[in-house]
Length: 162
Image (cartoon, rainbow, N blue to C red; front, side, top):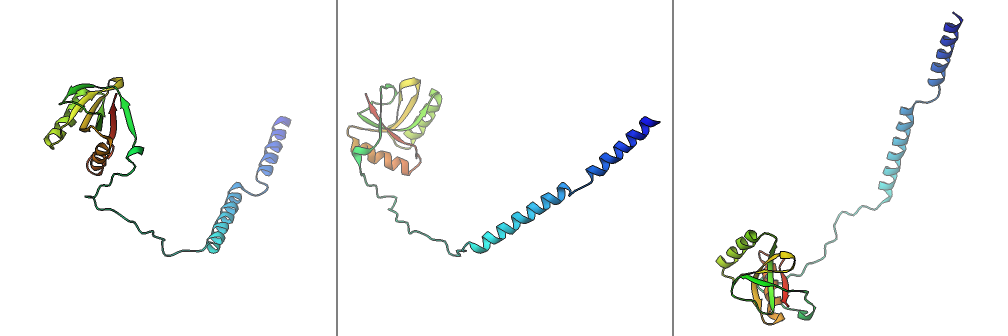
C-alpha cells in the first residue's frame, strides 16, 4: 500500500509540473504574430512603385543578317569522315549531332527535302554530325549559321574540317 501511495503522489507531482508555465502553442502564436508585425512594418517602409521601368528594345528585321566579328566566331575543329553527301569544304554548319545513325539520317532527309545540300559525317567519339551547308571561307559559313539559327535550328554551330 505504501508503494501505491508514493507512486500516486509522484504521478500527481509530475502532472502538476508538466501543466505549469506557458504552453508551446501560445509561444508559437506569439512568434508568428511578431513576424507578421515585422512584415507589415517593412511593407509600410518600403516604397511602392506602380509603374514598371521598361527599356526600349531595338530589333533588326529578320531578313537582315549582318556578319560581324567573323574572326571571333567559335569554330570547332574535328577530324571527320564522310557518311552521306557530296563532300565537305573547310567550314561547315552543323545542325544536328547524334549517337545513332538512323536519327542523323532522319534529319538529313528533312534537310534534303527542304532544299539544303545536306551531308552526314562521322566525327570523333562516333558521333554522326548532320551538316546543312558547307563553305570554303569562314564569313559565308558564319552568315549561313546565323540564318539557320534564326530559323528552325537555334543550336547550329560551325565545324572546321581537320
